[in-house]
Image (cartoon, rainbow, N blue to C red):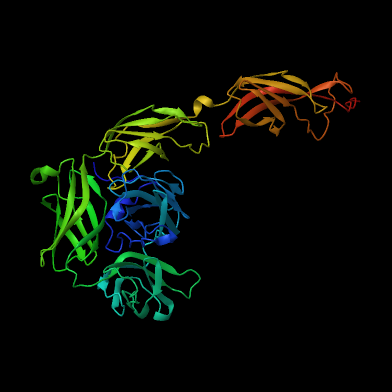
Length: 545
């Protein structure tokens, strides 16, 4: 199966993998970011720092403790002040690590800036890191950055950095370029602004001892306007030395893909030779799409034929600088079969909690995953290669029709998922809980006092939130699932005139009224002409001369 799109959950993941070099993993967070333990290091990356509104983007946390990857199964708590995470449908999610990495996907319902926070606790010590993601309006007229030149410079600053792209506007006085390194943000000096280029003099971060410092660059255009336009460039530039000819790998996104190959993989690190590199998955060479000092984009080779040793296996990713022969490896990429969903049990549940656990059977599942049941995100309980256990989430029900839709599974690391409509359907049962009215007793009477009580008999009445008689709301009490007591409203403006042979105060038939009950999920049922109104007539008819 190829990568698939899931509305409002993972629609943009695949698009993120095919984005330009500006849409690459973010710069790392400092080891002691957020005031936590210096023993814990958290680096945050994203597949697209400027996704379109209404789409999703991958967020990866790479966590180490005392210089080593944290144990598998370590929970990473992600939170956001804008949007929701695809795995939970909430602004909070806690995936666990594998090989020191935890991945989720952030989905933005509209244009806006999201501040993502990831925190980890290991052996009683806690640290956190932050990442900004700017969801852009779905418009083809916004500014964009396609590349940075150069991609690195000395940490003492003073490099002239050119941001190449399009639809730029303004002047140096209305343009701002900020550099964030290890949680410290400083402004560069904007020199020129044209439609396709912005040049800026980089600031100094000389106080940091690390030989390579990745920077998150933020370009802000129109600072003199009510709503400036911001573009985030998380892996555009690194402060480092070109003399460092030894490549290092910090992270790869995604870290898994199908045996068919051709997964677009971004390798983040430093020391990559722009004169030429080779990238190997296991012993098989990959096709290099682009390379700069701190980022390489490749297409994974197939795990068939010459790559047969990679079939369904985790393999080491190796980067070799051709000029120096220096080699770096140590991060794995996992091959697997395409995602396929064959069955789900149970295949239907009540539309109201509590919900039972649901088991999804198939192949090619690789944690972390995102699962939707009839378009509703589910909470992940466990993931195995052929089986996923989830708990459904409550849907928003606005009618009385069963909510039915496909079971969708997406491997978040790779974006690979089962094709729409290729698997079984899942049903939230609504119709079977529709209220039913059978009778009203008494079915007629004198309602003039406003105190006449009637009993409604039926089924599924426990969730009724409104009762109307003749279109008039009334007070009622739910006795049990089959019984409701209601007061017959008396709000007739004018008493009826007597018709022969009636004389005041004889009771006279006024109306055959429909009785309608409505439940909290919008379901209704009508007892046609369920109650007949009788009221005392007050005016005798004038005799005909």
